[in-house]
Length: 379
Image 1 (tube, helix red, strand yellow):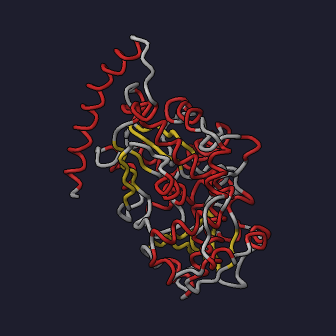
Image 2: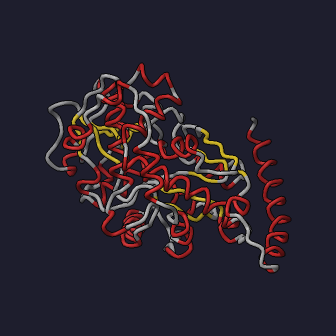
């Protein structure tokens, strides 16, 4: 489907929902019980910050699809262009309903005047890492000063700068090179830079492709947030759309819970969705990729306690770092752009029922043989 047609479909959908909202209000006033799925009927188009969706990163979505967690919602999961800021631009232009930008890309969008609200924080811990060739991992990130960091897209500098600044690095000395998607990891292996931006899940995928690096892991040193789901502020403020987005996010939360209970099952579901991944990763490597991601998605759980919950202190540190380095030119009010309002409803589901789904999933012989305890010990 062409992007201009997607935008046109979005306008029609919103108009339809506004019309139906009057009917919902009339039913509520009459005391009629309205099924939750009926309130959530609609379409949500989600756009990835990556140039592909054939990855383990989105396993909660594919679990939700397999088990019908999205109910009557018509959903699409679409790869975004490799341009780092494409995610927020597509949402702003009505060509997608929900995007998944990094905090750095989100702030770039906000700085450009794009009205967005983050409604579901996927990564409780920082998902981003720095890769180094074997034997070249420094003891401290400050040793990157004066060195070259490889990126898949120039826009990824907005990810690196706040993270490195918070770690005490003089970012004015860093030489960033956009080596292109998806070859920036290969460029590092070939000696074209000193380090490369990476993230949880990608580490295992690169290993499966023969790119075996050493890493400085973001969650081990950074208190900054990771990617989150954002929607247009106009949609967020529209009460007629709240049930739709809440139900949609509930399906993702169920998928996250499923993955926590049975990581092998969640991984197998993705591998069955994309058979081509088997040529890149064995079941063990694929499960390791999924578990790296799951660890970040459940990061700082003792403070969050809910899937998708934003930690205000973490986001404030990010915005403060952005101001200090000039990435953000004016102060951002957290209450304007970060919200847990839909998160609480998204977590309103039976965890025991999801656990039954996860534990009842029939694993293939190949995935039954995967040693999840050994993987967990290596994370």
